[in-house]
Amino acid sequence: PRVKVNCVVMKNFNDDEMIDFVNMANETFGGDIDMRFIEWMPFNDNGWNRERFVSYKDMMERIASGSSRMRLERIGDGPNDTTKWWRAVGDSAFVDGQSCSVSENNGRSARIGFITSMSEHFCSTCNRLRITADGKIKVCLFGSNEKEV
Image (tube, rainbow, N blue to C red; front, side):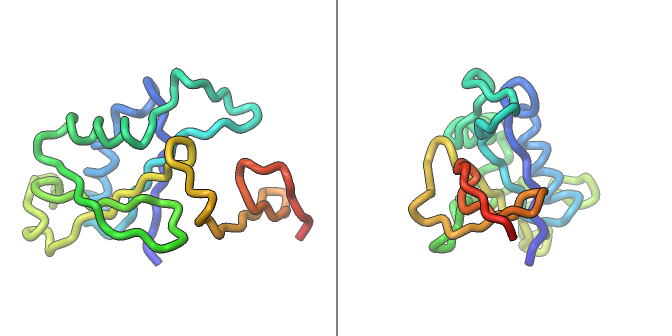
């Protein structure tokens, strides 16, 4: 399995770094990792507020408008995937700090994913189980039901 780097995107905190993360995935890791951007979700005590929320649509617009050399191309998702997958194409790949085409980077470009739990729900296709830090199983991150392991 590929390494996934997750970034929860928050307005006026790290939303201006999304292109840097995509470039890192291509330049530093040669396109061999998955870079996922996650919509900030409201949980108890995480300080969530609507003014800092960045939607999937807004993330896509930021990437498209923030770089003339980067465009994202839609690629397939699995039937139970919670991530919408894209790939950075064009002159968005880097080797040794120098911009190059994806073909010059051995055809590699990182997969760029968006987890849209707030703006485009995927509950009907999600088949995930999560284990909490205190050893309980949760079926849904938004649910309050937990079971002892």
